[in-house]
Image (spheres, helix red, strand yellow):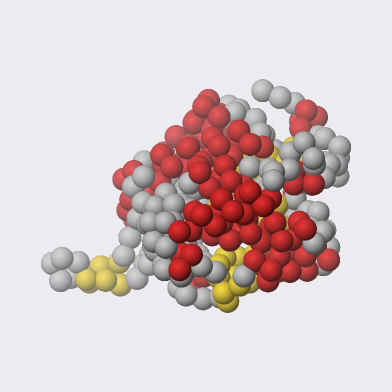
Length: 324
């Protein structure tokens, strides 16, 4: 276990600007484009030809869809700073979380299709606006398009750290293509058991895939480090959303992070859960009676559950927490 001062480093250029870390961009772009021909960009492995604009589970073809791009002041303090985190929200998703707070973006065909040059210009405009980083939100299903856009932006002068803001339902193969392009990985580790993940995000293999993905993220960037002014500059930041009645899921995740990954993992224990999307909707059960969809999570977590989650994280050996 380290000390707080061990994670303070001098300000450094992003990985893609360092000759010892920067990957050959042309090779990465070519490899990314090949991934689209029989899509294996995420664990769904649909196999559709997205290069020919076919769509798989995520509902996105050859071009990524962008819902919005703006300086975000609601992210973790170490990301937003004074100028905001330069977020680019991608439409579509490879999960179907019944509680998704952004369901209108993730589960509907919203947003505008954009090519690599257009997305690169968004990145550069956020840089010109004074943002501290480029924050790619829900990029799991558009990694090839992200790589194309990053290559174009880097060639035109991008110099901000790149944040990969993900559900953690990621393909290790896609993450390896991003090695050297991403400085900060920010996965949300949602569930520990296949039962919970199958029920609430329609992916029973989510826990296994998330563990594989987060291991790879940590291998690439290590534990989260900061510049002397408190800005995150490189490493892993894990978000964990505490859900009502599911603190045991959180407890198991914290134990794995501390013992199997690193006790120095920086964690944001999130209290923002609220019933959204399908949760709480009226529905008819098999017997024809009116019921409430997903009634077991149709409430906010209690203060006692949140306290229990924090205590479980500390008991597991974690000690680096976001204090928002």
